[in-house]
Image (tube, rainbow, N blue to C red; front, side):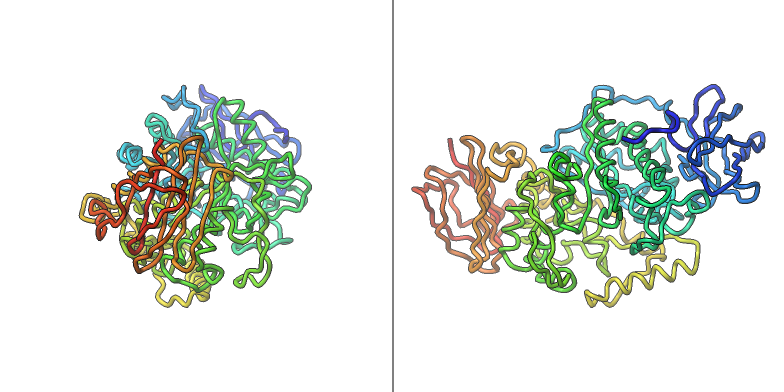
Length: 616
């Protein structure tokens, strides 16, 4: 457990009555002062404290006042823990009173993990306005769909007004073009009023290049490791105690001051730490301790391509103790079956048994040889629960890291879209939807930036071309072109039209069944059997809870299939059939009720999606 130098976090903390406490870690400077720009311009030296910190309380400072730090009387730099950058990454920081917001969620304790259904969205492209406030009117619709948790892509201040958020350089500052701190607080409060959680994507593996002045203050970075973004963050070298404190305080800040319900940690495989207690373990412990103090449930979810179950195993058995992780293997196994793509990392997938294993274990690669990586990959998930895996058929990475930003709706048929939705939502895992997929959005989601440094702009363009070389994708949208951003905005009017409306209703029905069918609510591996029929390209997932039994039948075959399936004795009611006309199918070949003496013969139409429930 880390110890704070004072009870206050880094940055400018408004204390009320015109008093503000400034605190900054700057062991690379000999003197440090805060330059208040107005309304009465002043330069006030801060006192040097232990471990390279400078701090002090300044009178006559109010929320809205702008300031820089003055380093050694020469360099003026924004606050590394700035709460707001109203003029962008190169401008002055602003004092913010985060404690005056009138919260209406005093009885909110957060959802239980098993009930989480995520909806990932990008604040800038979800609405035409591109702000937090503009999201609020859609919350009721998302709740009616069956969403229980909004997951925001990163909101830490980045250069300009257009970015995915992974180029943020001020981890504590809420992006000015989205609505700043007040806008985010209002969105979280509105979510809680609707009974929905809000998760935030945070980036602790790197900071963006433009506007990154942290190195002027302290050894935040190390050359001992390299990441795709340059020098790694210093989590285990000299000075790393305070670097770790900086990011852990950031996690606690989101939970405490913004009432965030969970953090999605970006690309934790790029958090390089050889110390005895890994940063991820320390972070999870502190977040859970703070959640207990606040009387709320707060979750830590990792994104990792390591297939290393230690990330989510309990600390008592040598794990890091995170609550869940994104499961790329499930996506890859499903995507290749639907699209036939085999380039890049998709070369390791494409067989029905890959998806069957993903249903059974989460990971497909649990230690066997990966042709794409040219080495063995992954370890076992035997000690992990299904509710520790977040699965999806689309997300910002899998869509946006394509040259054309194509969504699944542009790559697969309508029947395929229904198959994908059923596989994800009726799985034993935590489902995640990417904004717009619920109605088959056709607008691409492209990679976009608004950097001001011409050399950086060209470096980003070159990097994107190199990244896509393994997939043989030729045409790549220019990230810096504003049209790339504008093309990525949702056209939500589609939701009410033709097959888009039907797909939306299909998603809503799947989420209703997930909630209401008792067997589907049991997210335990021991209450599930998976049967794979590779010759027929049919997958059968049987689940149960006490006397409730359900069977999900998915056919990836382009032709009709006749099967003799093992089903428990009794009358099985058909509760979902994607072939029915109400779902714009070709017509069902399965009767409403089936009697099984132990096995049953079925003729499935092409690309069938069927859910049966045993009558009690």
